[in-house]
Amino acid sequence: MSKIISLTNQKGGVGKTTSSVNLAASFAVSEVKTLLIDLDPQSNATTGIEDLISEPKGSIYDAIIRGTSTKNVITKTKLDFLDIITSTSDLVGAEVELVGLMAREYQLEKVLKSIRKKYDYILIDCPPSLGLLTLNALTCSNSVIIPIQCEYYALEGLGQLLNTVRLVQKNLNPNLEIEGVLLTMYDSRLNLSKQVAEEVRSFFKDKIFQTIIQRNVRLSEAPSFGKPALLYDANSTGAQNYMTLVEEILSDGN
Ligand SMILES: Nc1ncnc2c1ncn2[C@@H]1O[C@H](COP(=O)(O)OP(=O)(O)OP(=O)(O)O)[C@@H](O)[C@H]1O
Ligand SMILES: [Mg+2]
Image (cartoon, rainbow, N blue to C red; front, side, top):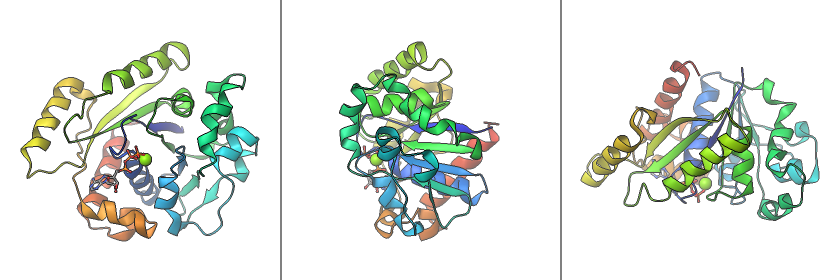
């Protein structure tokens, strides 16, 4: 059965895109059929795997707002098990354009309906806001992964995010679950990282992934080559952390 997971946190720069891209690549090399959707007008997930794309198709904006058929916006990548729906800066306008549509929170669900069965996992890289794009993502998702950066103020804004998840569960998508909270950019040399990890653990208890994503320079270098870390330096700690996370997700029977 296909599963849709949104990577979301309205806080900027916490590792949503890095996690989306590298999880998607790790699923794909594990021969799990995966679709990555870039739902952020910044298009970082799109540029982050640009090297794997030879024939770009339309974008998520085309599908949601222009009504382009979904099959015409799915771009194949060099990895057999990975497709992507790209984003362009047009998507900035979608937040406003969606407001005028009927069933405005269900537009992404409509877009994915005809193709979701083709994939084992669909991963959605959300923008750093809780606007209509993110609401569309949460409405069509089975679960959310919440990346949290091991830095000061890590828990700031999480109340608002959890409240949004609850509102979506109540009004738009009763089946939405929290897949897990993912600690990112963990630096084992820093007491701060350890403190933040403990604080997050005491807040989220068993909702937290056992796998922790360490701070690793390869993860920050890889996007400038348009590649996931796995295809840039497969043995790097960062690439390996995301492989371990995929194992954890798959072994949970999800
Ligand atoms: N584990 C890591 N180790 C080192 N650098 C990282 C790691 N994870 C992310 N980064 C870097 O941190 C920055 C922010 O990460 P990323 O773009 O994934 O966050 P984001 O939550 O998607 O940001 P935004 O909210 O702007 O969409 C990027 O420069 C990225 O390369
Ligand atoms: Mg991002």
